[in-house]
Image 1 (cartoon, rainbow, N blue to C red):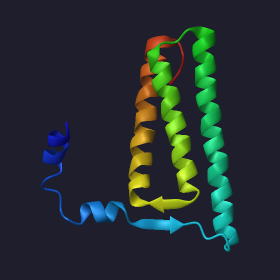
Image 2 (cartoon, rainbow, N blue to C red):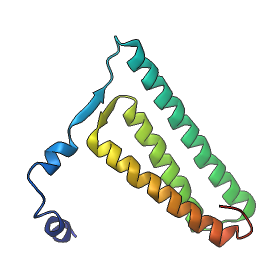
Image 3 (tube, helix red, strand yellow):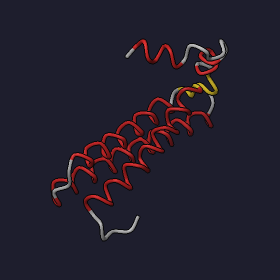
Image 4 (cartoon, helix red, strand yellow):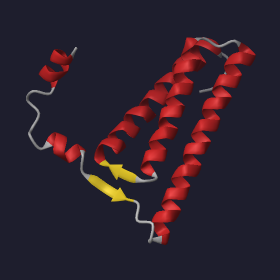
Length: 121
């Protein structure tokens, strides 16, 4: 597996990985706006954790399948990314959040189509 990944990224420009580590924002506790941003991200993380809990609850109440677990896990990971974002925002985090968001949309479509065919998307 490592060889495959290495082959995929072998021809990447040398600036790609350092650019992914570039920090766009870091928490400055002396800045009230930064503290507000931090708190809002933590509240958003809590909201994603609650949504994950609802998905698990629905799974137990209605008997969904394994896709429900993946759907809940995606929300937990998205919430965890907001916890990280409350402290620091590197470029890789923005990329990861985009991938997680796309994953949530795909999983939503799968879960609704498989387990709740009458529900609206």
